[in-house]
Image (cartoon, rainbow, N blue to C red):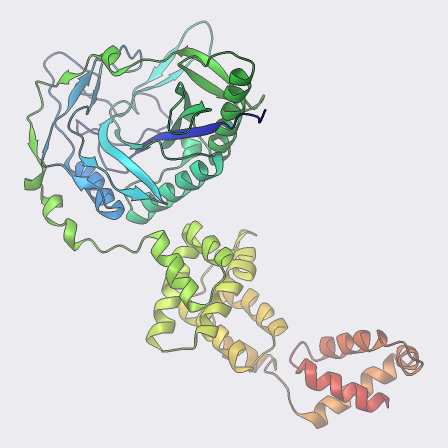
Length: 472
């Protein structure tokens, strides 16, 4: 009898703190990471009697902009609801969210279909490790929180992780959120079910508050294996909410899973209903032209970059900005694609390596591109290029000026190179004799010494031929 085949089905819920200047329903500064607790608070976000919430238009505009980027359908009619489930870290003990009429429906990202995107307010930050009591910091209470829900169309942990990474990139590209997972600005929850029957979903288990891509993939992979083991042993999976232990690398039970009726949603009577089509951001959606990460990857691939290099550039904020500027200048000057590829390779290896050492970069894209053109034209060797790059990274001098003043332009003067060859063979006569005696690898040593004495400016191929001729 053949062994049963189990299929996992995964849907994600992602909460993202939006990078607006003020909170979602009041004018308090949106700075949840303020070191001094409870400094950005007011009667509205502290729920004083008689205070009234006013929706943040910038937050609504950010959500609509995101919707345009992922092909979602913006709502015309929308409203905010009260989510009446006890929150110990929200002053009014309920959350302002959206239920039946979210701002966005549909759309897709990284091949994953979206169900909806809505706005709500974040909770305060609780601390339970200071003693036999809890502390609450309300700086985060009321911060605009965008919640995205996917369709249950993901079937493995890697796809889920890739989706979360792409979402973070898109949010940063649009400028609507920093989405720093390590600071809680982007939090992922995974709904996972396993079934042995095709087209039938198993019992759903939610894993809460995953705050790194590694945790997203690890928790989903573990939970799939756990549910499969339960089913194989003849048991049944319980519908529940679980957490992720990053030390033990396993999920653990937190509480039984709530349903929508447990939250007792009803429209908030203090916030007027909204016709989003009258919002200024709605009228500008068709004018939004933003180059998304996937668009950049395709463009870079067409220019000749490898997939790995393209991904590395797009995923790093500095590299993405710097290389985009280099590309614009290269295309405007109608430079060959080979120059752009050189720029990408030197950026992702040498330039990033220099920056990683704490160097304050002053090198402009123009001078960096000039160096790439010199390499492509054969004016300097790759060895010289690396040395010049290290120097001009902090000085921003013209690379050709540096190469000329240091005598580093590629030397093809055979008479001068022959003198250099003679000097090297004389200095290392014992190695030269080894080569003459049949030790072929000795030639590489002599070539290295000759290149060293030329400070990398000699053409290595010409130098090699001159060495062979001289040693004959």
